[in-house]
Image 1 (cartoon, rainbow, N blue to C red):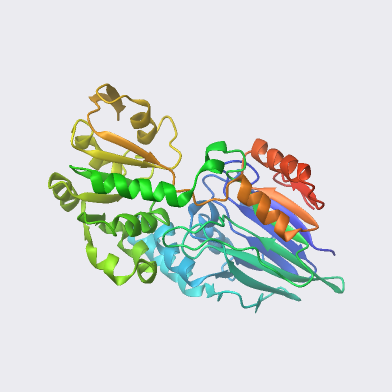
Image 2 (cartoon, helix red, strand yellow):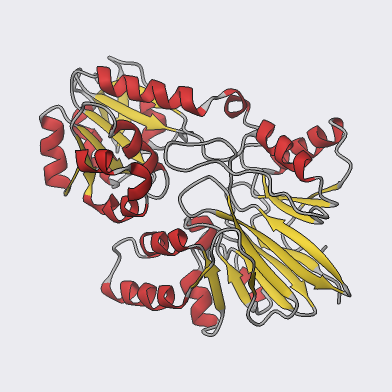
Length: 413
């Protein structure tokens, strides 16, 4: 049997990732998707993996871990140390004591993979793995696989989600350099057709956000995604003279990045429950709360409601905002006009600021990264079909010599 690549989930925009590398020595599952958002029945169609690699602690890459461990209790799971620590928040989310107990049991079994050191893959003969920094969020790692393929070594790189630019806390990914190069690359393409992202400079966006917070006269609310973005924003506004309070739920997430944040910034952060957060906003403080698009019932959405009509308040929207979310409604409304907020019209008095702190690779980074690797074959996943085909055409237009495949779920290569 030669080495094969199969995608069970993750070949479309917004679809969680679950891809398999199979050889005569065994099967390696790259991320595990999500029972809720992956193709129906994908776990039932999946061949039993010997090892699961989790690239990072976002739900669209690790969401089905508990289901997978229930189906195959002896499955070996591998990830970086920071990813394991963040998985507790990603999988638990404060849902129930029974879920927490299951999460704890699974986390104790995960094998920590150190950075840039090859480790053997238990149960997969003739294969080893190395974690390489991916940028994106704390702990996120590309997987470099070396697999025996009929007497020769095939080298496969799975990017997971990545970016090559530095953020405030997380350093950007570099192009891994190996003697003999890379044979296959399985690469995300989330922002491959996002023209705005291609023109953005992370540092300029971050500086503009910091300035807006510093100049705000009244309360400032920043809704964030819990894992990854929260640490970046805490590092950014924690360096201002403002009094910053963070939702208590995010404490465990920020602890993972405490060293990168630095003790001076950390010491300026306070944490509080929803009652304390409301009081802090009433005293014209800055609050960081979970709820990246101000979706219904999130802490950010609840805290935003009394601020919407407050002309002294500032509400910060980060990254892309879908039209039907609270963030999308805030951005589409004019100051002084009405905004539909959870079923009722509210006059918008607050200033609404929109900044994009992107942590995926835009097209220019994708092209440079893949050109630098020069792989024999590139599989494009995790992006709209249009984005992936657009990236393929752009690579070929630039003279890229390797094969580029736009992957569909269920295909074998």
